Image (tube, rainbow, N blue to C red; front, side, top):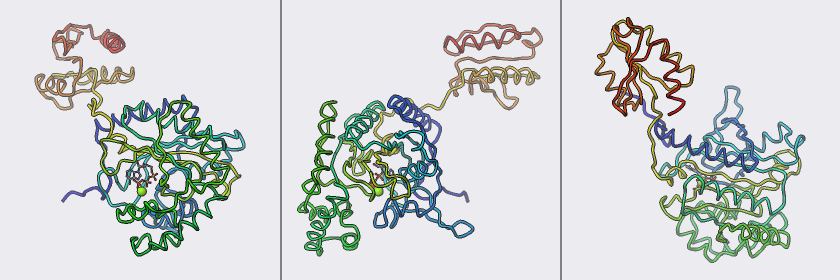
Length: 419
Ligand code: ATP
Ligand code: MG
């Protein structure tokens, strides 16, 4: 019996992998244009990193972590998200010492033990970015403008930017007390998870996925109405900058994020068509206290993550052919050595070249060349080799020329260069 993959993970096969690469290339170019540099963070981290940052009473830490002890009993985990590792790396490598502003992006897999369904996996991938060191609302608007531009540049149409402010350490406590009061008064109508959350972390109740809870929560007090003067001014400025740049957004006074560290600006990018229930493509916000909470300097932060699987599901199918060889070398008879030399030389020149592996007939090799989509076939038969030449067949034009073996490499490289 064969061994199957683990629940909730997917293989990206050739073809699909090319589509992902193309999207990643676009993302890299956009990040470069906006002054972001790549950071590659580890896939395993200490479990504590996420308990201290994402928060104990969150879905992620309560029930979605892939946590395991290493051989010495230290508790490690597969990273469930990218912000905390980036902040950890920022602190550990003292990036703030070289530049007061760090603009970083990452692309890679994340792991959450969730119930797999369309758009929700246990290994999924994020393209994310973080800016550390800027508190101004202009930065929030810049990051929002970038993420909207990025998904548009990737080819996604029909997304809505939903925006809210979550307040900060000054104004949120009073709001939480008010919210908790309300939640206790409707406790009987809430689900079991919410009973616990309303005591430990009432804000998280607003994010409950249960429809019954959501109906009750329509009457809950709004965080946006409880903001202190500074948070209100910040929020108003973010919105004004977005309007200046013509970035469309919708205020969503009930939007909260599933991670504890957000303050002030919080947002989601929601697909208006095409994804069904799991329609949030990207999410993020401001996290001014996180760097300090993780033992670093008191540096503000702002970032987001795009879910690759949901993003790719929104993109037009397009061409998803795996890369095709430019040249197929067909060796017939005792010509293997010369064929392999030509193949190797061309590959060293960067020409995508493939060959048949077994002593197959010319006909079957041509069939394979056609199937692979090769534009040219170099035929090396014994007669040709004795005459010091190859037959170069143009598969599209259905034409073939004899090319001296000594010039074959040059000729094929020239055709590749002018393709
Ligand atoms: P959701 O409400 O869908 O659970 P979340 O609030 O947990 O999302 P974030 O932690 O903000 O999501 O992650 C940002 C983005 O990453 C999401 O908008 C989504 O596109 C993607 N994402 C999150 N979890 C998964 C998952 N299990 N499978 C696929 N994509 C995911
Ligand atoms: Mg989630």
